[in-house]
Image (cartoon, rainbow, N blue to C red; front, side, top):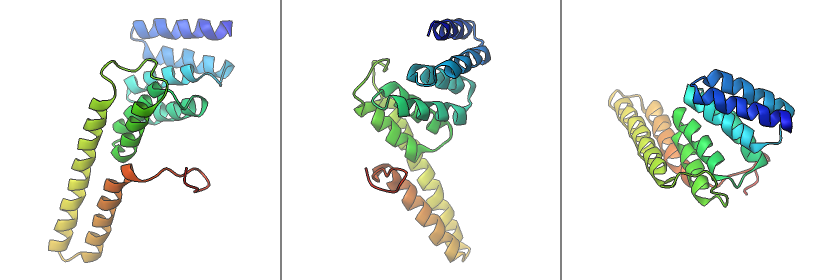
Length: 172
């Protein structure tokens, strides 16, 4: 654990100097030594977010949540990564999970309402774009394409309200 603490300090120091890649490396080495530490995954996720590496940030947030699912900060990291990937239907669920999480350690004082509202706004924009594409397809006589596009828009709009299912497909 002592080596892990040293690596966390190294990463924090690298971040303070703007050396995010070095911080990611230090967190990666720390995770190699302790892959059950949600804080390491959260911190590396934050570093990846600052680099705009949203897929990696999402992976770390999801791994961290497997270890500590009640931590709002990790749900926020997941939501931020999903926002970066323009996956707003999913990010809305993650923002709501951040709001509902029991452990609010490290949460912003203003809470998670502002990014939730922004994600909702972005989702409405995406749905509106699909609706416009469907209307164009109708105007061009491409009815099958229009139906498919409308179906996608409806599914996207309803996603944040659907219940979660686990890996077996069972509702949880």
